[in-house]
Length: 103
Image 1 (spheres, rainbow, N blue to C red):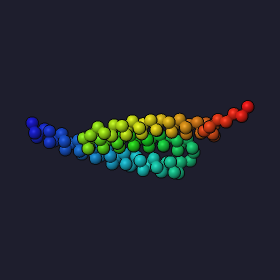
Image 2: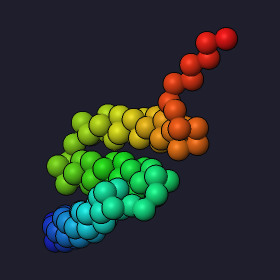
Image 3: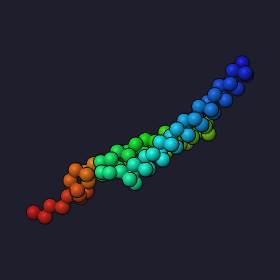
Image 4: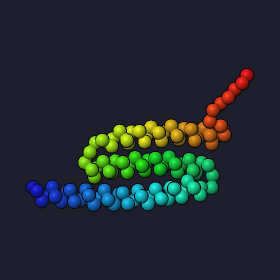
């Protein structure tokens, strides 16, 4: 029984490490798209995807560290990512974040 548990722990460590490397490569490519992106909608999409990748990194680190304290961090990143996506979409559509009607 202990051999199975040790194998499972080693497999989990290996898989989370591979996932972290894959997400790190994805983050680098997204940073390139954010900086060099040809249009603002491309940058907005890359920022949204970067937020999702940050949530995945926090989740994988919670698995590796065997803790549930990072769940709040994951929720916070998700909420901030949603709000920032709405703000960027409004800016791309209208060109202004705050509507000022002085009628």
